[in-house]
Amino acid sequence: MAGFNTIPAVGGGGGQANMTYVASIHMSTYNRSWAQAGTAGYYGLFSVNQENGYAYFVGSGVSTGAPLNRLTNVSHAFTRIDIIAPTNDMISLYKVKVKSTTVFNNPFDADASIGKNAISAFPSTIRSSGNFVLPNNALPLVNVLLVGGGGGSYHHGGGGAGGGVVKLTAYQAVGTTSVTIGSGRNDNGTDAAGGATYFGNVYALGGQSAVDHNNNPTSNGANGAGASGYGGTLRNGGAGITQTTATGLGATGSPVYHGGHAGGGAYGNGGGTHRHQGGGGGGAGGAGPTKPSGSTGGSAGGAGHYSDINGTGLHYGFGGGGSDHHGNSSSGNGSWPSHSTSGYGHGGLSIYNNHSGGDSGAVIVRYYIA
Image (tube, rainbow, N blue to C red; front, top):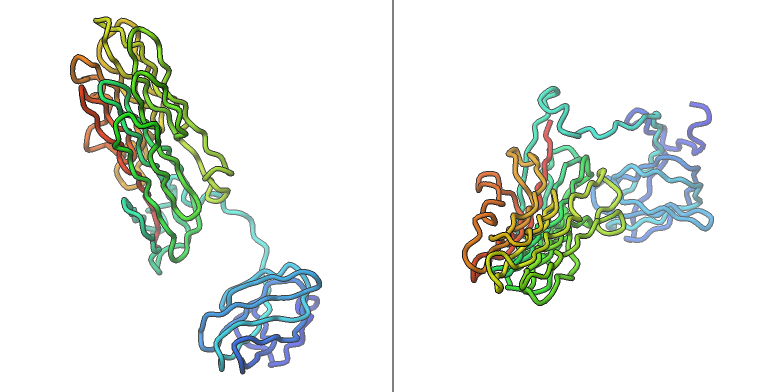
């Protein structure tokens, strides 16, 4: 194969097709420097004992590190290989010939090929912090939905905001991925936000919490909380945040953000001088409605993001409804989807002289087995 392998195959060739054997060394100590030169290309360093280890392909002012027993693209010429591996192991070097290919875009986008090529989907819903371990027989690409923790509500005031939603398509997850689930807020009137939910380095922010009628919510949240109105003066709901590549989404897995919606405003003068009212909290799918002047009751929360990633259509990160000082808010309760279609990370629902906390977030991983 002229022009392919400039390293002489001193061991006589052999091995897997298109993998040309170069040579082997013995690890008389755990740290060995091998004076083996090579051109740029794909290489594999394999442990005879199948032990873990690491190597550096060292060139002039440049070095490429790689674990043992993996294919590595070394983009530069090198003059030596520094290897860390267990003593008495034998390490073999191969140069690999690969064919050119083109990108297969979004292989699991909307599960278009599932069921047609004997690929089965398995959703995993995670509600507590820990690790997600991809099964050994699963494909190395997964679809993921993250929702942050919901914000808390304020009694006879504004509803809490739902957590933001981040969706990843064909995201590479191999082995173990750390997971942190954002907690929902359950402290009445505290200007804070629900916790962020992490899947590896990708995260979804939590929703903002509603505050009392003397203040406007100002904490940073994925979606804004509903305002707590009083005395006929309009108070605006909180503002949401649009996450970007630099603020949590990352750049792999075709990340898409759902959120950044404001909470609803409130006047607080419906049916009486001292009437308190609350706007609805913003949701991952839409803003919280503002309560019109002169009306009674609280306003509904903003819509959540609808997804069937777990096999059932659910609403994730919807806002909590506001309530009225003179009674429970039927419109607030009515703003929440039915229990059977409620997802996670929703904002707290305001109640007459009481409040409910925001829901904790979640990570839903959809993996595939052929």
